[in-house]
Structures are given as C-alpha cells and as structure tokens.
Length: 438
Image (cartoon, rainbow, N blue to C red; front, side, top):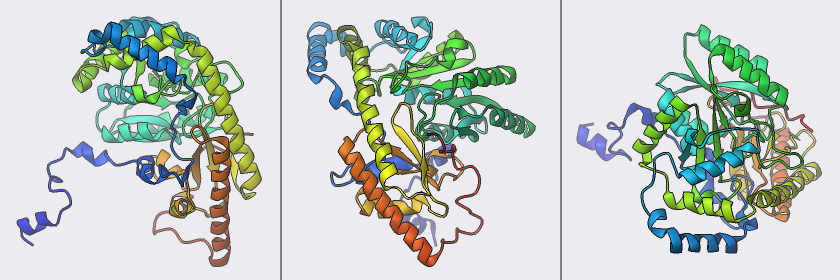
C-alpha cells in the first residue's frame, strides 16, 4: 500500500506528528460515561458532581451583580499569575479549620485543584520518574501522571487509609530498581474513590516515612470539610510545612463552575508554580476569584458547608441502606464518614467493566474500579457516587444495579465464569482497599 493510500485510511492524519507524551493522553472511563449517564432516564451513580441545589443562588447572584457593578473593570481584566491577594488571605482562614497556619504569599490560585496536580507534576517529574499513589487512586490525577510519562506505583490501602508498611515496601522496591520517586500523591480525607480516611496515627507515620526517604507529599484535600459526624481532621500539611504541598478546592464546598482551587507550597516551590501557571494560563480567572471572595466575605460559608454535610449524609445513608436491602450477600462495601463515594466489591468472578453495558441498558451507571488503577486492576470493584442524585433516585439506582448483578450471577451459575484473555487475570493482584469497613 503506498503512502497516500495508507494516509487516506487513517482516522487521524496527524498521528505521526504528535509528541511521545500524547500516548498517555486517553479518555478516562468516567468521561466516556458522561454522554450516557447524563440522560434523564439513567440513574447516574457514576459522576462525582457536587449537588449545588443547596446553594442560596439568590445570594450568589446578588454578590455577582454587585461585583460587576462596583468592581467590573478589575474583575473582567487580567490578574496576577499567583492569584488575587484578598482571596489568598481568605484561603488561610479556610485552611485554619484543618490546623494549617499559612501565609498568603505561599498560596498559588489554580484553575481547580486539578490544574494544581498538573502544575506540580510539570515542575517535578521527568519521563520515567515514579509517583507513588494509593490503590485505588483519583482518575484525574492518574491521567496527569500518565500524560507526563510518569510511572505510577500503587500502595495498598485498608479501612484506615494508606498502609505504612506497604509504603515502606514500595519505596524500597522502587529504589532497588534504580528509579527516582518524586512524590507521594494522597487523598487523606474521604478518599476518591475508596471513601476511606487516613487515621491520625498513620498520618504521622506516613510523614515520618517520607521524611526519612526524602520524598515529597502531595496532599490533595477537596473533601476535608465534608465530614458527616466530626470536625475536620488535622491536615498533614499542618505538621509538615516543608515536606508537603497541600491542594485545596472550592469545587466541593461552593461550586465547581468557578474552577478555583489552590496550592500551598514551600516558598521555593511556590515560585516555580507561579512560573508554570503563567506559562499555562497566564493567570487564573479574576472574575471567578473575586466572585468567590465576595461569597466568603458576605455569606455564612461555614454554615453553608454544614448544610452540605447534612445533605450528603442523608444521601450516604440512602445508598448504604439500599445496598443492605438489595445487594447480593457476597457484595461488600464501606460506609464512608464523609465525602461523596462508596467503594463496592463484587462477588468473585464478576467483572464490573464487562457488566457496565448491561447496567446502562437497565438505566443505571457507575464507574468500574479499573478506572482508578494505572495497572489494569480493580475489575472486581466499582465506585458509587451518592453526592448528586436525590435519596429516592439513589435507592432506585441501587435497586436497578442489584437486579443487573443478580442476572450476572445467574448467568455465571448457568454457564460458569468466562475465561479471561490469555495472560490476563482480572481478579489477580491488589483490587483495592478491604471493604470490611463498617
């Protein structure tokens, strides 16, 4: 076949021109679900969208109207690459709830905390560098690490979060292989997707392990203020100023549409983050920052968060009760104490990814566990989100999901478990944290 004919059959005629790092740029399983899960007849237990129906939209609207009327020329103009100084000062008040005593000068405003993960990876990681991540881990972060050609090494979790001994073993193995570990990426509070929380004792131990091994900790904490029955836990950054970069976000405690997050970093790292921010976006949105600043100044934002906590707790209870009522006995799941997610482990032999098309046909959606691993594991688990649907929709979604699972079990009993592809055992290896967490 000549070159012209070969090019004419390609779906992408630019395929030979892309940089090598684009091989790591693939659509996540969550993104692939959005088109289907957004249909009104489908109960989506997939997306982690905050439920902003509890926001006082009249107050937010008035604050934005006043902002445009009185500060429009500033709000609609370019701003600082580091972010609005007034908002950075207010963020120190937010972080103080988790024991962090910080200076506004060490905060960099980002386009959501997702961009903060990207910027940190950009300034620290070369191709082939290792990033340690919990198993499972946030799909958005895994996508960033893959796009920068990092090697992800997963570290086991259990009901108390990251297992310190597993972290020690992972560090030893990576160093023995002659590779460089650039940082540990962790979501210590109400983990996405596992729903577990790193205990206070383990936080201290993990910090000590990383301090001894000279490994930076990237503490991603979008859910920390959304505990259902407890005050916010002390952040890891509160006890380690130089060895931890802390990431925060207003997406879960206010509204994701503004796309405002932040990174709190040691001073030297802060400078690099500002330079990276300026090259990526020039500056974060002045309008979004000033709108959030006005909200924090004029509204009882802590009272609003309390309302969100109560709303999400009601949804958590609806999901856990429905799982207990409808799910087959061989299923297990955790009962999260905050956040958005339940991690469900399926009976042996059931593949969550293979089952998904049949679940969508039954008008219910979830995210297969494989989305949250860099190495193909997780097929025997799924993430269920309770944050967005109403309690009644959650119960109906779980009922539909249980029906699909019962059919899968009946088929397996009739025909036996399907054999995996040669060389691939979807249940082999570590499949996620133990779900004996009640």
